[in-house]
Amino acid sequence: MKPLYVLNGPNLNRLGKREPHIYGTTTLAEVEAICRRQAGDRPLVFRQTNSEEALIDLVHEAIDEAAGILINPAAFTFTSLALLDALKMFEGPVVEFHISNIHKREPIYHRSYVSMRADAVLAGLGSQGYAMGITALIELIEKRQQV
Image (cartoon, rainbow, N blue to C red; front, side, top):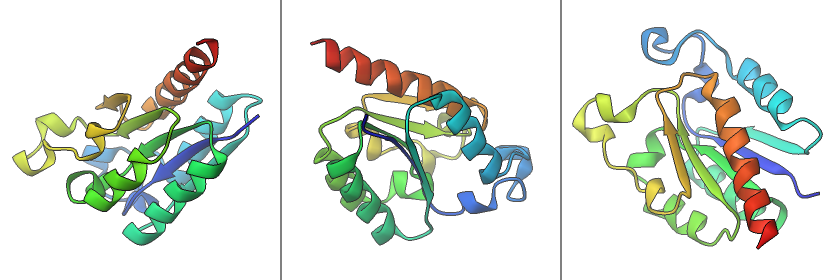
């Protein structure tokens, strides 16, 4: 069984400490535990990087290895055409996830390049929403397998 890839972008390593009024107090280690619990028996690769280059490399790895990608690209959501291009090479489902509701934030956060490729987008559910993202990703994978 191919693994689910959960990819996290810049500053998410500071979850629990960074702007808790926006991102809550859940740490990235706790987010990983949420994702692993929700994935059940499915293998899961969980990564975080502050580097655009490294995030693109992780997407390239997923192209060869993953059944699906749940990605919280953080600031790269709004800036990285290179990340969009990498995601467009991935043939499996992609779920874009944001802890905060990016559409209630400043206008700079309203345009997501990643959404141009994502099969689904979840935002504003807090860190616990990662579980919903995993569920959605699994459902999208299973739906494709039935076709």
